[in-house]
Length: 262
Image 1 (tube, rainbow, N blue to C red):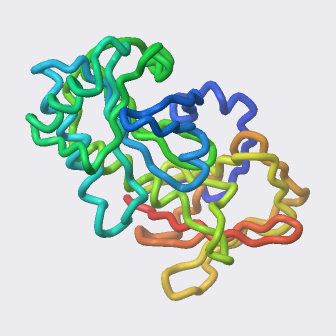
Image 2: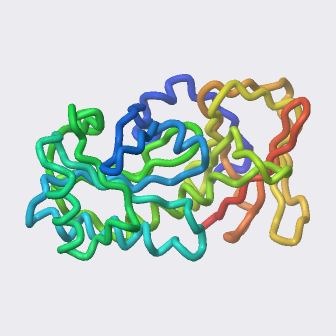
């Protein structure tokens, strides 16, 4: 790790793999309720979205996503939701629901879509290859997990959900999500601040330990306006552990938790 802090404005942020964003849609579920993806994400929901045919080879992956979502029912009640979607909209609601219940995916805990008209288009995420699991979250509508054609790992899906939760710390008023996210989290020698909208940093970016002691401050010589991302190299003097990063614009202060690992 370099001793000097390096601030790099990543102009081409949108092209990086981790910056993939979801594609909005509005579609009715099998109960007739209409869902808009971005509205749900903006409300703080974390969505595990799974396309199935349904098919026998889809069972283990779909169940892995279901179990991962359900594991947050106590710690984050009502926040992590599971959407089960027919791949191209050629299966009825009863067919998809029956398949799910038969295979341990309890439909009264999830939302099922017949996907009529293919409104929830798998082609937006690499194309059709059953089964296909996504984890979507944040007000920047980010894709945290995207794996097709089997081999979906329940632990990896759970880890992706944890990432959404870790990066979506609320502002001090406790009511709204940060306009900034930290990636990666946990981090090693650098972090990237991801700006969801134009965000101008007027003051120092401060790093605190778990006891509330300021251990480092990054004082930009000029104000920075985030339209993409700001990469920060961490000094080697900071040991592994949990930290809080505080970032301020002209009127508000936001706190983001993150972890440093060796």
